[in-house]
Image 1 (cartoon, rainbow, N blue to C red):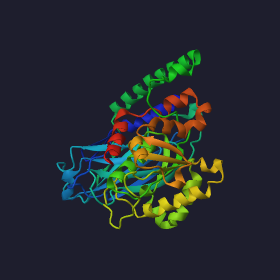
Image 2: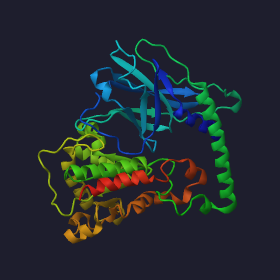
Image 3: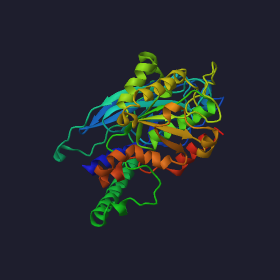
Image 4: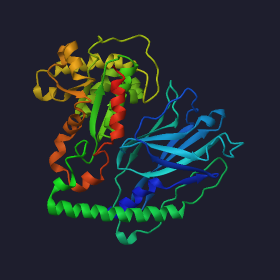
Length: 415
């Protein structure tokens, strides 16, 4: 069963073609580039379920507008909520040089395996525009796969293809399938060796103390709500960098207003905050800059994710969450749900004054100093029930130095 899952998972590296245009999707853990000369928005984004031998795969489809702006298109960025790292899909040859005259749109498809449950997929063309909304998003429910008898399984793989307007489908490159299959077999052997070592010598050999990373994730990401004051664009970028780090590297499922503007508009700030706080294991309240008073300016810069504009909801949510902390102050158990995160130098905060009175009783972390401690604390409730197979296979256990440096640079920009 494990080998079959690994073979399916390897399909994410298979290339697909359309009208002699190849797309190669690879993991990308850094901040995507932005430019004033950027391509137009995606024309459309669709996600459909594909069944294969009792498993559910996601067929992610996106449409590119064929206009003058495609000369600036470098890639398409795909964010999948349950996966630790986003994907960048590059085009070869570039669409600006491809023979696609006469077409208004061209569709591309990408097949990938994910877990079950609610899934949220976002996509945008790269480089991102410095202003405005760049991403399209689609939600889908992935059912739990039904186990099948091994005897009923076949060696047939699901079709992976990309098509353009008026063009037919092309089959998957068989060479890529063979390479992916042998790669999975080798991975299965390595994982078996890890398990034997663990059973013989203990978990300490499987997880070295020299690794820098969060504590192993449970079977589902830890739900976390992030609330922050409306300060300035540099502070906003640091908050988004922290949220993205926890989402893609920290094994968390982050709820933050910048990613749920439509939901906030539908429910209103107070109801949205109440529902998200109730569903979250922890509410992370980002402390305002110590050297500046909390302010809510009437005009705020409108940057694009991951350097987004400061949404108007931030002006309402921060005072509301402070009132929520005060209402829970009488119960130490309820108050323990609220943590404070300071962005910047801890000595700088001490020099410029203490926290606002509402937050002084909350547990406090200083990023970047306490980043590893923060991640481990978010997962500490599941420490005793994590098996070695989960530690090896689950993404987001050990975060990369590049992702840490990206967050560090965003925090440094506040100064």
